[in-house]
Figure 1 (tube, rainbow, N blue to C red):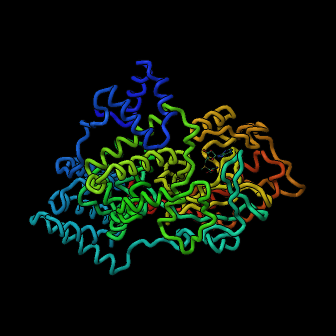
Figure 2 (figure 1 turned 90 degrees about the horizontal axis):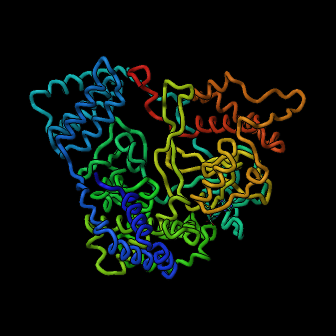
Figure 3 (figure 1 turned 90 degrees about the vertical axis):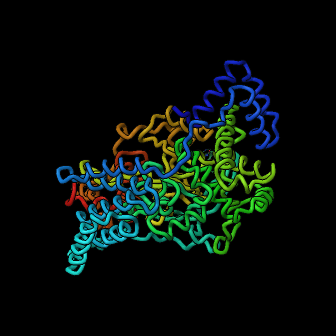
Length: 594
Ligand SMILES: C[S@@+](CC[C@H](N)C(=O)[O-])C[C@H]1O[C@@H](n2cnc3c(N)ncnc32)[C@H](O)[C@@H]1O
């Protein structure tokens, strides 16, 4: 079986340890004075030790595969069967079949036709017509066209009768608005936020006014973003929308689909032009966090219009110490300057162990080898300097990704559970300003992905003027023990957390004390209303938000307590209902088995 990049690194590190080279490698890395030297040093160690680790001989180049396409279509047909009626699962298979089929082939046409049948059953007649058109534009078998003709007639009749579902008004997510005046130079953040730096926290955000629970203070767009691989046949690779009934495939690779030719063009212009021939292998070799290093690098290259010399000179001109995203004018900034703000995100390189740096070097070498071998970067990199540039950018972003990138979510629908909608990771992105926010195990902010892919920051505990904004990096005192949090944060983020929860040893949720409510104030959580929130009831969410905010502002002096944590969770649920993107699957709950 082919090895992934971690296996290749593990084998190399094991060899280094068992052949007593560990100390030499540690010292060798310490003696390097640049990233390029570290990568070259690791390459030499690898070349001298375990044969040809970077040959990647077992990787098959991605290409359309009719046999697999037919196989997927058959699996789709099993799910589509009237006794099964798992239409959404059928669509995922048909989409895979579409992505695997040769352009213009009969296999492609049949997959579109089968998807049109699903659309018909789901009463999505406009989408059905689109799929019928796509089937006809490819090589749909002559002797079966009557099927498409009949389906088309049915659609036109239903559309004329207006007998189809429309999204209820209440279902449409609202657009958030910053709670305070926007910063004139950074319109996506409130003017009360400032960037500070000190020895304990590094760069961090503070507020120069009191903030209350419910305040929205940041809404930021990613510089680069990536769809997680297991959603690739259900979401648009570019905008991440779950338009699964009408996705169109990349004509070359088998793992990328788009909701429109517009998104397809944008993806090609920003990253897919380079990545197309290697992205399938990259998904096999790397985790999504490391793939973000690839995506950020390819996005940077396109930002500089594939002019590697200009990109190199730009990178060399960035003064990391003085580069400050708050000093830029984001109302007129160009994307090259935006890249500068991504380039300087924390990497924690000086805190990383030799084995960690070997690992990231191995990743940069494997990624760059594939890019040089199988993409136009091979030709574009016509000197040593441009090869070095690509390797060092990959190396740098492979360190920054696990520290500074954020997951993006949408609300997935799971009908059998009590919580019908729950946040599901659909991608990740790089965010210049949000990445300046430090961690606390008792945070005062919640991040939330919006339907347009932007991420907003919402205050969930009051923050006093001069206070720091704190995010949670996945280690909350309600959910993880002190020891787990300390170890996890140190391992991934290289710092010893000294937040209030760690210092004051806040308990887990189940051990939280109860708050003392003022006389006459009833307990904040009403279970009937929680039920309605679990069903994503917009009216309930809109009504409860001010009430929950009031409780949280009032009870914060007693933090930590059961009531505050429960209401924080309920408030997030309200915000998901109001602002987040919901899976379109839910619309079909009465028409098929979900
Ligand atoms: C996303 S960055 C946050 C911004 C960072 N302080 C900077 O200067 O770029 C994450 C890194 O910030 C530092 N950090 C985050 N939270 C911290 C905290 N509570 N105490 C100390 N350092 C923290 C750690 O080095 C962590 O790896």
